[in-house]
Image 1: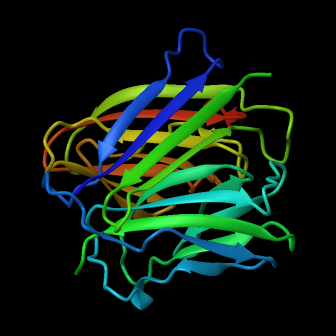
Image 2: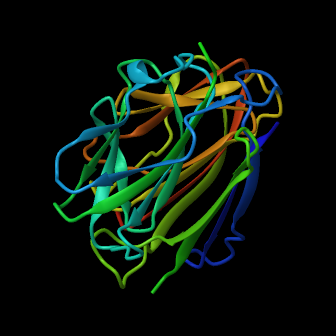
Length: 140
Length: 137
């Protein structure tokens, strides 16, 4: 079993920047053993401003292990095939704003999975927007 | 217009059918559809165990559309860095792990900080942004 993730970044901002192409295999903390648990791929439709939980750590069916090698992928996929780069959804951890995903933007970040460190989403507007996500983690 | 694109491919066989997700985004300035991020920092540092360090020395313009790439190039899988933003723990990057996030430097305290564990970690980072408050000498 393996879960892999590849990032490719290209940019013409700085002359000579050769880009970034890196692949990681998601493993359990401190080992080469593949990570073995996931929330599965899911979407969350939002239609009002205000922070809500995307992932509530204490409510997961299988308790995630704290402070290991968990990761989450999140993407703002807009609504019905239309993405808007001018408005976004703020992603947070334990009420701390991590950053804003504008239409089409994606992120991949590690998580502590501590109960207080829920992942939150907060749209800029009341327009409908859909967030897709999948979390990979270790069982407690 | 400067153009920065970030693509991701995520595959997993943990489910009964293989999952494969691919996405590409063009990194734009906040609230615009026609103007791309036009400044960047790119670095590679060795971080010794112990103290916490701010990874970004200057503060990008607050609450804009900055994107941060960060990879732990340590070859020992037991080495890791703990990543925090504004003192909030985000998670750990073990040797070989990377992250890519829209970093919200909402104020001077909103820096991304890292703490190395296990040994000296080798860290590569790239910050794409639309302006910084440069440090005056």
